Image (tube, rainbow, N blue to C red; front, side, top):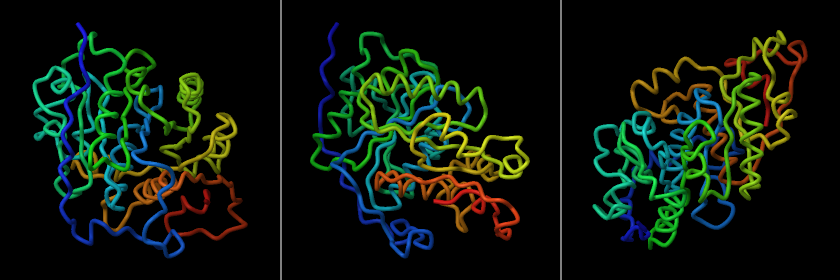
Length: 312
């Protein structure tokens, strides 16, 4: 049975948001209050990893939230057909009643399946299907391609479509990367995650996605200094890909997840939240960072010593 692309209605125009949700700290960006958007929109970015448990969904939630804070409309898509979690991290678990599967089945319109965030008017969530359910095989790998095309043709298209890719490299992976033009590859600095990340990078390139950047997550500078953990520079050299960001181990991640509030909304910012905010700026500007290992005796310790180990 063939399925037609989803019926298109324009996205609901976001109301004027409060200045506090539009502004982002400029202290780490040369005094600028917003990055310069590079390339045509909407930009479709898949956030993937290969290995599960490396922080991929946390990264997606915070990139999307940070984009919305910058006034760049974003649609975050949870592409896991049976084990979605992105709604939990955004605090929207009780508001998801319709999904992309319902749109493709003709049961609702696309705009009805989009869930707007309570605090961030420029952020919408779209789930692929309901928990404990599977996407019908007849939908095929073009499911998200149809959705992305519909969003792209909308009179009010988002600036970014962020796709939270399921773990592994099976059919869910193929579906998630199909509409993407860019990829953010999330990994931790351990050999098992890096082997999977290297495999996924190869698959992305084979699919025609050449703009791939990495985020190294859960880095502990004390272990890096003691040579018990690979540095971001080591990871970058092993994978041979540009570095979008380096996120330190941060206990606030667990608290943020349990509250359903993205880290980038914390005030004052936590080290991990600040790192993800900076990664968002680089993503918007198609920029990358340079990892530099600094000897402890060459630079005095700073508060939140993570940033004494990694610089832009």
